[in-house]
Structure formats: structure tokens, C-alpha cells
Image (cartoon, rainbow, N blue to C red; front, side, top):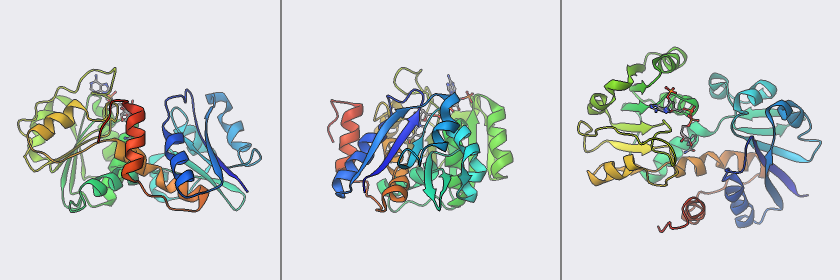
Amino acid sequence: MTRKACVIGWPISHSRSPIIHGYWLKRYGIEGSYERLPVKPEDLSGFLARLRGNGFVGCNVTLPHKEAAFRVVRTADAATKKLGVVNTVFERDGELWGTSTDGEGFIASLRNDLPDWQVKGRTVVILGAGGATRAIVGALVDEGAERILIANRTHARAEELQRDFGPRIEPRDWTEAPRLLGAADLLVNTTSLGMTAQPPLDIDLAHLPASAVVTDIVYTPLETDLLKRAKARGNPTVPGLGMLLHQAVRGFELWFGTRPQVTPELYDLVAADIDPGYRR
Ligand SMILES: NC(=O)c1ccc[n+]([C@@H]2O[C@H](COP(=O)([O-])OP(=O)(O)OC[C@H]3O[C@@H](n4cnc5c(N)ncnc54)[C@H](OP(=O)(O)O)[C@@H]3O)[C@@H](O)[C@H]2O)c1
């Protein structure tokens, strides 16, 4: 029987998920399909109600549906309950369940690129407190980060993360960010600054220790200016595309029954779609 999955969003044309899941379906010889479907916000609950009837074993949920889908499906785990969003929906025992895989994607990408580096006991500086930050903060807390300093333009959003994730989260002013870098074992950019067609992330790295790991969840461009500057001064860097690839692993396993691998070949495939001039 052919198993069908999809990604839904509004708009949806930018999603790279079909490339990722299509690659795995082929690699593992699974009879299945994964399509991209535009679903308007007002059609979301009806779409999910008909998901199984339309022959789908599940779907990925992207902007702007992550919160609305959370309210429609059953929540699969405590971590997702805390996030209030789902990006992966699957069917079990006749019901629709939802989970969030962004946090594990973030951690898996770090582990993949820096296998000897541990989050436990470290100080993390995060720039930004938007939608993607919640999952990353949740995962960093679960991994045992000691302090998580969050500088965001809108201070209240960083305070909200402290309220939800506890005293290890320290909200800081956006203007403080360059100085905070002095304490960082890990620096994470979760703002949209530095993304193609967005303003640059102008942050002075002078205080950043040379050993600090720098990661940027922005993956268009593949190597952001932040990563370039960090690499030039000798910091280990982890690009954002790895998080996107690793967050897809659990959904594929839930729908198609095989835990897939994020291979260099897959990385190259998606990287070349983002930047046709990409060379490993
Ligand atoms: N690698 C992956 O798998 C992955 C996954 C998810 C997202 N992403 C990428 O992560 C980025 C953020 O996504 P998101 O969904 O979290 O977006 P979001 O909810 O819109 O949050 C945007 C963040 O950027 C900050 N920001 C925007 N413009 C700014 C400016 N001019 N100055 C200072 N801060 C500014 C916002 O601050 P305020 O709170 O003050 O507005 C907020 O913290 C996007 O580039 C997205 O593509 C990557």
C-alpha cells in the first residue's frame, strides 16, 4: 500500500520538505509519496479532520498553522505541550497526534557537526525570542544547559521564555548582546537577521571566546555573515540547514516506519536547491 504524507502551509511554495522526504523514500525503497499542499488558515481544521479519509498517514505543518494545529490534534509529549505548537502530525489508533521536532533537530545538528561537544553545564547566548526559539530553549534546558541568556529586541518575549522554562533562562536587553558574548560557550542566532532579503545581523564579536561554538538557524544563505565572521576568527560553526534536515527524521519514521539518516548526499541536494552555486 502506498503511504502518503504532505506538508501544509500558506503559502507553501518555499518548503524544502518534499526534497528531504522524497530523497528518503527513494533511498529506502519505500512505496510512498510526500507532497506540498497549500491550505488556507480557515481550511486548516477541516483539512486535518479529512486527513486520514484522504489517505494521508500524516503531515508536516508549517507557517502559519503550527499553533492552530496544536489546538486541533492530541499532543504526543510533554515537551510539545509546553511549546504550544506542532510541526508534525501523525495517526495512531484512529486519532491524530501532533509533536514538535525542531528542538531535537537543533540538538542533533549540533551533535552531528561537533560530536565531542556537550550542551550540559554550558552557558548559551541566544539572539532572538521568536517562534523557533521556544523549541530550541526547551531542548537546551532538557540537555542540561546551565544558563541561557536571551537578548531580544522585544524584551517581553524573552521574559515569557523565562516564565515558561524557568530560572536558567535570563532575559537581557538587545543592546546588551555584544557584551553578553563574553560569557558564551554557545552562541545561537534565532532572529531572522542575516537571512536573504532581511537586514544584516550587525553584532560585534570581539567579546566572544575563541572556543565558543556559533550556530545560526538561518539557512538562506547557507553560510550567513555571522557564521563567516565566526569562522574567520577561529570559532567552530554549525550552519542552520542541519537543523532543518534533522527535524525531519522523526516525522519520516512515524509515517513510513524507517528511521532515516541525514547523509552528506541529502545535505548537498537541499543545499544545491537553496544555492545553485553550492559546492561542498
Ligand atoms: N534551521 C531551521 O530548521 C529553522 C527552523 C525555524 C526557523 N528558522 C529560521 O529562523 C528564523 C526565525 O524564524 P522564526 O519562525 O522564529 O521567526 P519569528 O517568530 O518571526 O521571530 C523573528 C525573530 O527575529 C527578531 N527580529 C526580526 N527583525 C529584527 C530586527 N530588525 N532587529 C532585531 N531583531 C529582529 C524578532 O524580534 P522581535 O521579537 O523583537 O520581533 C524575533 O526574535 C527565520 O530565518 C527562519 O527561516 C530555521
